[in-house]
Structures are given as C-alpha cells and as structure tokens.
Image (cartoon, rainbow over all chains, first blue to last red; front, side, top):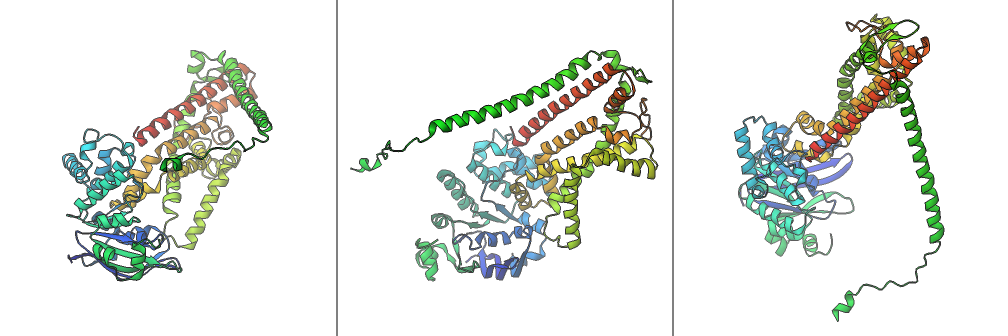
Length: 255
Length: 307
C-alpha cells in the first residue's frame, strides 16, 4: 500500500441528534483512486465532504474522532486553505456564469494570482489536464454554461486542478452525464490518479470497478447510521469480499 | 417472432370522449372572459396614459421645460427647477438607500441563516428585521413622511431640505430595495456558492465575485424601481422638502419635485393645463424608466448567462 494521504480514526458525524456516520476508520492511500460505494443514504457523500470541510457549511453538524491529511489534524487547518489543497467536483456540473477562461482563472485569482501571462498558462495546462483543451481552445471567451453537460463537468475538473490541489473529491461526478461523457470522465480519472489522490463517491458499481484502485463499502441499517463495512483493494472487494453484506451489494442482491 | 412482440399495443376505440363538447364549450367561455379582462385592463391603461399625454402634451414645449416656475396663483413659468430638484432628490435618496438596502439584504440572506449564529438574541433580531421589511413595504407613504418630519425636519433640525427629504425617501424605498435584492440573491443557485468555496475562496470572495454579479440584474431592477417610486412620490416630500420653486443650492435647501409641483399647480393655482403638462412629463419619465429597466436587466441577464 502507498503512503496514506487521508485518514480518519473513530470518526463520527451528527446532524443535530441524528447519528449519520459511526466510528469510521480508514486510511486512504496517496495518488490512488478510492471509490466510496454503498446504498443511498449510507453517508458516503457526507463522509466525502469531511475532507474539504464542506460539512462546516451545514448547520447543526457535529463530529467526533480524528481526521488527518498528510498526518496533520485536518480540523486545525483553516478551511479556506484546506480547500485549496483538497478540490471538489460536484454531482451536477456547476460552472460559474462566466467565460471558460474566467472559470478556470477563478481559483488562482482568489488566491492572489494577478499575472495574466501566468493565468493564461494555468488555464491552458488545466484544460489540457482535464482533456478539454482541444474542444475549447478557440473559444475561451465563451460562457461555461454554453458547453454540453460532459464538457461542463470537465471544465469543473479543470477549475479544480487550476488551484493545484493534491486531493480531488468527486461526488458522483458522472451521475448526470450520458454514457459517452461518463467514459471520458472515467478515462480522465485514470490519468489524473498519477498525480492526485482521488476519492470518488459513486452509485454505479461498474464505474467503481473500472476507475478505482481501492473501494470502501458503506452500509446502513434501519437506524440510518452509516458505517464502513469493508475497505480493500477494489479487486478484492469485487472478487473476494470478506463481509456478506458487501458481497450481497456487489452482486446486486440489494441496494 | 421477436418482431411481433415489438408491435405497439393497438389503441382500442373503446375510450369514450365523454362530455368533450361540454368541456370545450366551457373552455371557450372562460378563455373569452379572461381575454376580455385583459383587453379592458389594457384599454383603461391606454386611456389614462393617452389622456394625460394628449392633454399635457399641449402645454409641453421647450420653454416650458427650460424655464423656472415663478410661483403665484396663476402658475406662471415652466418646470426646469422642479426637474433639477427631482434629479437631486433621486440621486441623494439612492445614495443613502442603496448601500443600506443591498447591505441589509446580503446580511439577511447570505449571513443570517448561517451556522454559528446560535445567539438567540441575534435570531430574534433577525426575525424582527424580516418582519419589519415585510410590514414597511405595505405602510402608506405619508407615515414615512410624518416620521421624516418628526425626526429629520424637526428633532434633528434639518428643516425642509433635500437632506430631510432624501433620508425620509430612503426609508420609503428601503423595503423595495431589500426585497428585490433578497429575491435576486435567493435566485442565485447554491451550486455557485459551493463551487466557489470548494476552490478555496473565502465567503466574501464568493459573494462579490460570484454571487453578486449573478444577482446584479435583479438588484439593479430594484434600484430603478425605487427611482420610479421617488419620482412619483408626493406625500413624503410634501412634509419634508418644503415647497420652494427655486433650485436648491445645497442639501440644506428645500425645493419641489415634479410630482409636488404638479400637486401645487392642481391645488393652489388655476393653471390646469400646466398641471397636465407636468403630469405628462412625469408619465413619460416613468415609461422611460421602465424601458430602461427592461433593457438593462435583459442585457445583464444575457451577459451573466454568457449570451
């Protein structure tokens, strides 16, 4: 196993009195793709948002336990600084109502980059990394909203890359895309995992199998409290799971 | 054969159309009623506008627009200084009301609902503020006039002046500006906010680089609506601006707006044609302002969407 990038120890999360995540302990390896799978409502998206502290924005959220990034206590890092290091791609593509160029330049700009030459470089590199450059290079002034859904999602990935994070969180990034656009995103995830630690939430079992190196299976019962059932290399989870519930879920017996 | 299975299910003509005729007839009836209502509304509107503009149009000429009123019972002179006073008052009022109103709306929508705002006193204050905005929007304008008179003219000794009038006017249009700004902010999808925060932008950067630009058409609409409100207001300024027909030379000077001048002409003089002329100028101004609102909000919306 690679060195650990993200880690939680007995992590619990509450929405008010509702216990949403119970005793999650996991070590997410660096520069690998880790898929979080499990039935709806098992807390996998909530768990994902732990790593860039987007849960802080939801009122009534309380947590216990430890979360580390690069062995540093994640809650001791200023959320604004943390989010520059831990990028996020959302389920629904959400480009800003600005030009393609401005969408990508947004992140570097908010962190103080003023040099237009450098910004142009960043925009090009980010778009190339997100496999979107060839499609939009002559049209950087066009609104991000004028792109197709798949292009918008790659634009959002490029936008996240532009602030040079080391981790990218993806919350069902292909859920609203057609099959071809989905494949492009999956190819992209593969390529990006050479340089980034990627954590992806997905509902799509085949997708988890195709894109991820490691898979974490989350499960919940009548209490609606999410638990981590099993975490292992994806091929182990898919071919030889230890837990009966994982096997049942993988083979489509429920979920 | 497989193909047979793919045949669409034959629709059988057993479904009765029932009372189709009666239903069509009732649709025609009700649509005619609504069409008639729309037509009558349009006619009334055109009649009012047409009457004022045709009657008033006779009094309007270059001299009427560019000479100052001379006062007196016969309503001698034109309306130049009242146009000037109106412009001053609109400018001053917006100068006070826009930052206050937009700021209050931003606070109420973007900050007040936030986590960490657990202080019960603050929460009570915020719900009072929301309630006050709703209530103030429905209060008769003369109440703002009375308040403005008591506080600014009398207690603070600003006298009948542009200052008193613009402060009272600001109270009048604040609910409008707050309301429209709130609605514009609420219409900005949360996806934009999350997207920006997730990139390491601060809340303030998110607000002024993403949320406010997206809300701008709505905010500007609210401001221009307020311009119309100030131009057409009489009650508030009747008790706070005085009635001097001269052009104010400082913010401590009084004056009269177009709408006030119209009131004086109609009530205190027998220059009915000049009152009509002033009215026509007012109406044309309001129509122009509404056109500007439409153009600006359409342009800005197109720009925000990336057109």
